Image 1: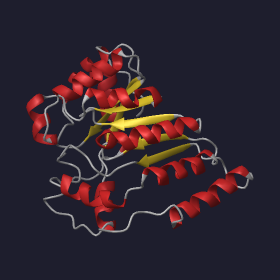
Image 2: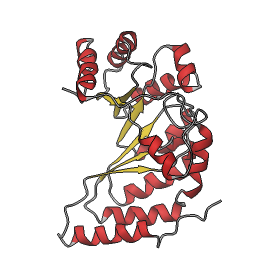
Image 3: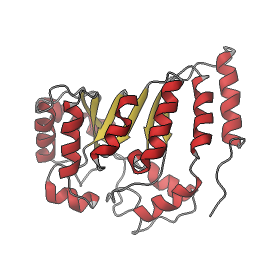
Length: 258
């Protein structure tokens, strides 16, 4: 196993330089930061890296103290919006809870990306420090959901409704993979789901990308059928805009796409 990341590593040294530059006016303030809190995930999505790869990638994750130190540096860069993502952040709920609490001490606006597949108690532990939930809906047809992610969708939908009814701010994020879930019936079901959640902020179309493949390469993990089941290219802008238009026609409030 590789040694854990140290607070005095090159990443932290660079963060310190950026923070000093931002406070001195030598660099523009940081407005948005995506933080992959963990590579681990409890789904096995057909278009993504598999659990085995996620667990390997998880070996070099920051400790809680290192993460808090990083947050203090981030706050000095202009108090950006911080999006905590993964993997699945709620898999390591102790770490996520501590990280979100520390971010609020620094007066940072926090968003949390989640697949929704977690015990409700985990949502309760973090919700008070989350300003916005970015909630994935990967598939709406139950049997396809199991086939595409390895898990049932019932818990995901139950948590979504409980989160909505609690008053949380939520954006539904729709990872769309050509040939997998770019179907009219899926878009129709998404629109119906969104309309059943009147306080929902809207829906965001997330076209498939191959960033996960690049991560596997950087970590020395060969791409193969045990890590990535399908091989498709990132859709072009016209295709993405077409998906957004379909959803709008079906009555969904879509936050991106022409």
